[in-house]
Image (cartoon, one colour):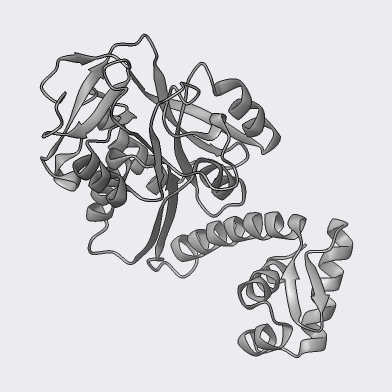
Length: 303
């Protein structure tokens, strides 16, 4: 296996066409096809499915391309520093459940690289997609939570996918609502007091298991429950319907504004927010700086 073969495979995967990839790489299509066949023979499985409609990745091929991209990124960094001695565009990607503080930490990270060349990605998405993005190298880091209810199932999934979970923040459970809510002035709220108001949660798509819910107490029998796909809709429902959601209590007014508040839920439940990463890949310097930004919210947690 050579770096050239990895480059060829990544280029094909980017366009799903041997013809287009050959033109980009300035080689003949037969030469490109032969190099990929040789690589597939060496690793023992097909990276691509060939058909008259073009080329698509196999399941194993998708995973392989993820690893190949990581290898090429590291090679580019080494080459830039020790061979060409030039600056290389900085690359970083993170996926997360819907946490404002995780987005805020990303904003602070970007500010640190304001004058440099960079290509960053942030994916605020469903729980399973957070896991899948890290598994398939789409993101270096995934931010999510574990608690007594979901940890056994998710830890098993992490193990199967070659991932590891590292704790960052431990939090109690808070009720997040707009400041005009009838219960907003309370110091503590019970679930019984919330019964007449709709609980709001994020839709999880086809992986709509209780274990993938972003809200703790996912098995509680809520009288009224509404799922939304994005944060803006959720915030609008809070105002329009006096809805609420359950959260960590970490509020970022810089991004969400000052119209919302978090009130302690009367419950012994706890949640541990942390990050998942691939066991076989060290966290990059940019990734470490991002985690440092998130760690700053430890002191801002309401407990």
